Image 1: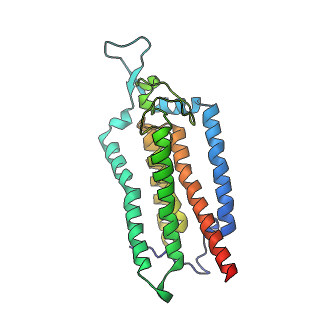
Image 2 (image 1 turned 45 degrees about the vertical axis):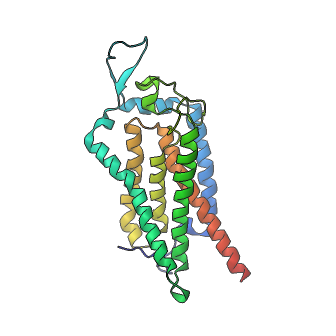
Image 3 (image 1 turned 90 degrees about the vertical axis):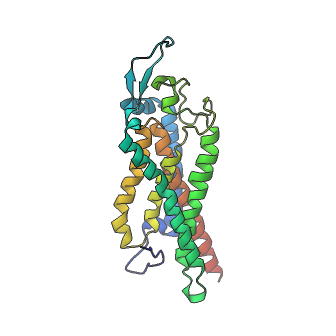
Amino acid sequence: MIIDFSSFDRRNRFPEILRPRSAGDAFVVLFCLWWALLWLFSVFPQIDLAVASMFFVPEQCVAPARAGQICGTFPYGDDPHLRLLREIFFQVPYIVAAGLCWMLVQCWEQHGATFKTLRARNLKIALGSLLLGPVLIVNLWLKAFSGRPRPRQTDLFGGALDFVHAGSFAGKCVSNCSFISGEAAAAGWLFCLIFIIPQPARTALALPIAAASILISALRVAFGGHYLSDAVLGWLSSLVVFAALLALSQTTHSRRNSEN
């Protein structure tokens, strides 16, 4: 099924966040919320530790073991059914992105009166937010240089590295680190698509998309792959980027209309 992103009329109004002023306000609120949550997790690192410990099962260390060594596993990460579900979810955002690229190419093949400006603009915002957020900011920058070890890499949960709080770049992880979650960021991007899907498809797809988006992030915590802060801030980062691009696009569009 091809979703027509241009099928909005008076009976099918934009969600509030899609209106220019509301999109800008949403960006400010989400941006401030992201930093407020980072401060919270940084000042109270016990939140991360408490949530991670809920999924960690201590085990007897196999000799030889150093003094005070903690051994154990995150059993959900070893469950084959959950691992298969995670692998499926891992691919979903990029399969969706490939579909959006195809839709954008189809849109650009139209000319004149048949060109759907709104559809093209929404598709470019969606694809641009994926590239800027989960790909560039999260995976190519933060995860590469943050240095925060994943829960299963820390000495508190069976690993060998020291725990560092959210926002600290003092950890000893070398690459593909825990802060912030790339999969949670991709899941947050999926959630953002709800705001540009027109009715009646939005009503039918909103709940499944939201549920999958939350489950993708939750599995990373349950597997010991990320702390709660990594998942929450990763997920929210995509909403921040999406709202920023949406506000910028609509401001530019409104300015052009006022000049014509």
